[in-house]
Image: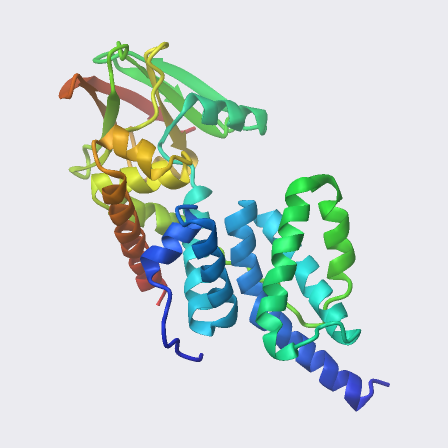
Length: 172
Length: 180
C-alpha cells in the first residue's frame, strides 16, 4: 500500500520533473546539439536532482533553479567527454523517475516548417539556412552575402521571429 | 504562468542559441531562464524551432552533407545535369533521395544562387549563397520523396553565379522526375 507521505512525495517529484524537464531539454539541445543526447541529459539531471532532494543534499531548496542548472552544466560536460557511457547512465536514470513523468519532445511539424521557410524572403532564408544547416557564424555569412556581422544577426533574429509566428500561427 | 518582470529579449535568446554571447552573459541568460517560467517557455519554443530547422534537409546540399547522408545509409541516386539539356531521374522504391548535380564552370564564383521555378504553379523560390563545389563545378539539388506534390514533372533550376561582384545567369536545368 502506498503511504500518504510517499504519494505526496511522488506528486512533488512529478511537479519538479514537469517544471524542469523542458528547461533542461532546451539547454541540452543548445549544448549537445542532438535530440537523443538532450533526452538523456534530461533523465540524468532530473534523477540526480530528485536523489539529492531525497537525501537532503540540496542546501537551499528555494534555490532549486540554480541547483538544476548546475547539474545540467556538469552532466552536459560529462556527456561531451564520454559519449560511450551516456546511454547506460540514461537508462539507469529513466528507471528512477516518478510514475507518469512524460519526457518533453519539442517536435515541430516539419512540413509546416518547410512551408514557412519557403515563405521567407530570400535573404532571410539564406541567413537561417547558413546558420542552422551549415553551422556558419555571422562573420562568415556576412562575407558571403556582403553584409556586416551585425546585419546578419539582425536578419537572423527577425527571420526566426517570422518563422516562429508562421509555425505557431499555424498550430493555434 | 508567472509573467516575467524583465524578460530576456528574443534577439538575446537567439544569440545565446547561436553561441554569439560572451560566456559571462550566456551564463546570466541560462540562470535567468532556469528561474523564470515565461523565459523558460520562450527558450523551449526557440529550441523547438532551431532544432527543427537544423534537422531539415534543404533542397540544395553541400558535397559534405551528401557524403554524410551516404555514410548514414541513405540510398542516393545521382544524376548529372548540364544546362539546357533535359535529364530524367526515376525516384524508384530502391532510393531514398535523388541528387541532381547541376554542372557549370564555377571556378570564379564567389557565390551561387539557385532559383527553383515551379512552372505549373507559376511560383519560384530563390536560395541565395547555396553550397557549391568550385573544383568539380557542381551544385547538388536534393530531391525528397515528399516534393512530389510540389511539381508533377519537376521544377526548373535556374543557376546564378556572382563573380567579381557581378551576378550572372549560368543556365536553366531541367530534370524530368519519374515516380513509379
